[in-house]
Image (cartoon, rainbow, N blue to C red):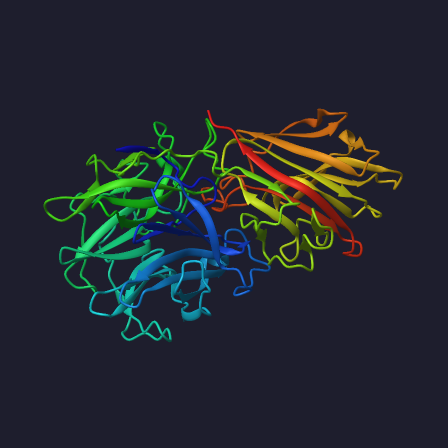
Amino acid sequence: MTQIQNPIIPGMAPDPSIIRVGADYYIATSTFHWTPAIQIFHSTDLANWKLISHALSKNEVNLVGTNTPAGIWAPHLSYDEKNHKFWLAYSHMQNMSGREFNSDSYIMSADNILGPWSTPIYITSIGFDPSIFHDKDGKHYISILEWETRVGYQAPGHIVIAEINLENGHLLSDWQRVTSGFTTRGCAEAPQIYKHNGYYYLLIAAGGTGYAHGIEIGRSKNIFGPYESNPTGEPIITSSPQHLFSLGDPDSGHFEMYNPNSIMQKAGHGSLVSTPEGEWFIAHLMSRPLPSTTLNPLGRETSLQKMHWTASNWLEMEDKSNLAKMQFSVKNQKPVKQDFHSFDINIDFAQKSEEISFMTPYHTQDDSWVNTTEHPGYLRIYGRNSFFSQVNPSIMATRATSLDYIAQTQLNFNPVHYSQTAGIGLYYDSNNWIYARICQKDDGQGIVLRILQAKLGTRTDFISSEVPISNRDVEIKLIYKSGIVQFQYLKNKQWLNLDNSIDVKYLSDEGVNGEPGEIGGFTGLFNFIGAVDAYQHSSFADFKYYKVINHFN
């Protein structure tokens, strides 16, 4: 047996959809307003996971102007054994105002997990979180949440299922509702269909995206139901196992369900997989709040729980509880060592190896604004919109994967206008970030290093603590620990503080712009390097390296 620590994929890796093909495991996760979209991770031992690709990387979607936390939601990864094809279903959430939740859902396929993926085929706009089930008789089915907007009806809606022609996306049957009386926690979403011992099993997320989140299950002899619910009447996995009846309640934070006795919070939205040795696991999302808070900077991460089938053909956790654990065991033919530093990043731009960990908010990466060809050995980033923009911010970012780490870079930059800046920082979305950057003094008489902050859309420039720099080639780093950041710069081989440490706990799912009682976002914190040029869009910064080193207690 090998003991494995959760989360298996730290940082923004929510809504995990797991499959096994032969000896290989794959997980697809949501990316929201970030591009390239739909992260795909690979493992051979369930302990160590590596990002291997993004499924939407060739301008298949337009995320310009996307509000937090809309964008690409809940990709579902499946494998059709009969036709030897990988399939992805996903939603493009375009509007959440007025709780209308306008979302278009698509499917696409590939012969290889690395692609190329087919052109996305439109399926429906009935709701979000679609998934595909490939039955052994050759039929295929799509399940999805039907979003409800009528006053006095079940909120946020019901799970529906239809037969589908995967070649053209046409439905071969009417939508059938299958979750009436199915859940007590409400907010039924993220349906996943499985078949085991003659039953169809419907796995759903319930309780909302906050502290009441959980996974519920039902079963039926007929794929269209009716589905009988789990005999316990409770989720089979959750971080908050006390009973909650919230049927009809809209999705909310449910902060009253915070579990003070658990490191892991918000466990829910899961998918099922079996190993060659016959073990069963559910991959699910989770969060880790900052100490003594309900704030989650890392967003929703991916974990695994070990499961088993009971004598009466119900799925439950191995220890027969429903409380999600921070550790699980796996049968392995040889010992497995979990590499906790596999999510560290150390990029020397003089090396020509492709780096796929970089993501950009709202728009795609292309050679017109970021490249390694114009100045070999460096990553050149052209400045464009300010970082308040949801159109063209010049940001290259990586997921924060620890609550204690450093991020560091070296750059060369020569601003000729006060609106031209470049540097390193922390980013949640266009309204919430902080940035240590090279810029002109306000009077134009020299170059300085200065901090700029966006908090809930308000701009704060730390003018009083600016530092003059004589050399336009500067090394800067940020030290992040439990919601506090300290920026530093290198001078005469010594790291010096740039201003005092700054409280940035608001750069978290609950700290950004949200309504009282609601989760403001559910994406996660990123580290970034970037540039701004609101003058002529002509200036550029050359970055020599970028690294993130995680610290673990």
